[in-house]
Length: 300
Image (cartoon, rainbow, N blue to C red; front, side, top):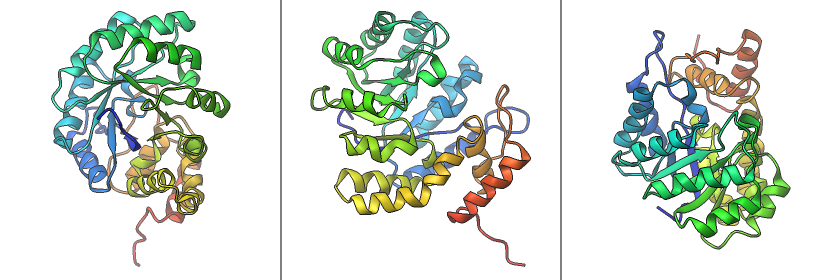
């Protein structure tokens, strides 16, 4: 569980038309992911629309994913809040759920803490739980960047901080971090469109959005790169790169939910303030999904 490399999916949270969680669809997604050799699953990350979930719903989603996984793959529980006290409380609650193996914690959003504030925040969470903790640096959504020096300080002082999902989009910063972290600490790409770059400089894998739609292909891409089969990895990246980009043509996860709905895996419902994609974007998404073979053509 500590030495985890490969591809993990940042799962969407399926909703019904009335806004409730579509539990059967979520369980089916988990099963499909595992059948397609996903290495781990992330419940209640950014792609899950977690800020729109009520407390009981958040816990319910994590429980459903852990129950459906039945120990076959690790399950990361997203426990992000802009209050350190609340983050600690959430992390402790998630850590009690059977089947949860890791706690994923992003920068405190909106507060814009400096490096010392972030250090104290992440350390408080790590000190409060017994599970491995994965940091999550996503300054585009939180307005706070976790710098390599702060990550190194956290590693030195918190033994259960085992990795970081790096979504800064800053490859030089990510490379700087990878060249300094101790062996056994994992740096994961948080962006599908940067996965080859991050793996190429020594990263351990990816927390993927695209693997909601193409779990087998993303898992194969990462495994190929990790084992030195760069030709296969590059071919898969070339084939699916436009899909990776398309997932962010509008605010995540609206595009990926649109495609999953086209595939018949979920209903296309988001929670405000996220709205379904525009008709123009849906047409473009359908074209990309069709080009990569995700849509079954109906015979006339």
